Length: 462
Image 1 (cartoon, rainbow, N blue to C red):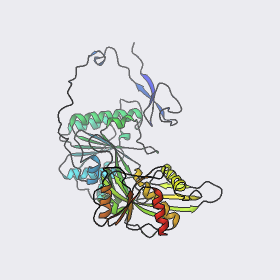
Image 2: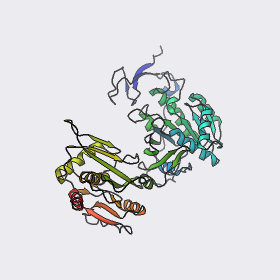
Image 3: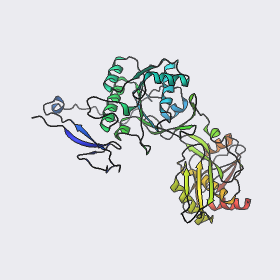
Image 4: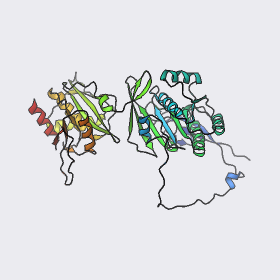
């Protein structure tokens, strides 16, 4: 007697599997995200159940392998994040908020690849072919020899790719719209996304073309669908930014063929996405140096130094409510820590003030090296004295108020000198053998060991 299919329940937010339905997923904490999936049992008489595996060949760790070849997309910012370009037989997953520009970026990249005589297929499950053509005309790439298709049936897509020769790159927009008739669930469900991705990835590995999958994201910003999807692909990239702002940031969260700390900077225009080769100059283009509460941070995104303006505003708190802490582009908990250090270790009274902090330009800063720039902006706002228009800051601040060293100080200083800054406030060298190379010509260094040194200097200037 044939066994009945096993019934399980999978969370569409994280992919966790349970034997019975529950209201809340224990893995991710989301409510009402469990949906039923059917698991077909393996018959005992089937060849797969009775056949024995073959012994695999074991090899030693020694030996050198040639670096993988790259397919340059023609968009330098995209190639930077990919690690030099697309790798044949690799799979890249691109996620981002709706309307952020994922399809625009990939259509531009596909057209540039097609212009270099590469065979590129763009398959959309969300738009008709005519809609893609209209978008290409609006972007000025409507003359590219790009092959288009509109389909959600993975079986049809696989059959088409099997029959098409010399395919180098395939774009699937998006994986959540794909459907496999052998899976009993709707498109976008956990089981459908997992099964469709498996079929497409297996074909890409076998035929050797580069596969780019567009993925939807949840309201928390994570990729929708099973978590295993991120493990199946070779690279995961997030396209970030505010739709009301022109800047877009492409960031790698996983990359088997390159670094994960690189970013690509784009500007959204009426002709699509344009590369920003010098983001520091663009982020500081509208800065006014005579305003209190502003400081320039010499940051680092991957191997790229980036200068950003940190803005702080203090206002007396209203009523009996607790003072407000509003942060855009930085960690709010780190701001609370820095405010406590300024008040406890440096005597700057901020507990009765509403604090507003903003990183201008829409970029999110995660590195601790921004502590000193944020502190300088807060002190400037508290004293009413603007920081010097030609001064940059970087350094990590500890709980005792000490200013700690950060990585790649020379690269930060070179970027500051290139943009015309003449002063830099940075951590003091205290360790033996930590001699810093000669600063760039025209740049004066001001080394501090404690945050109180910065407060004292600003008070004396006042």
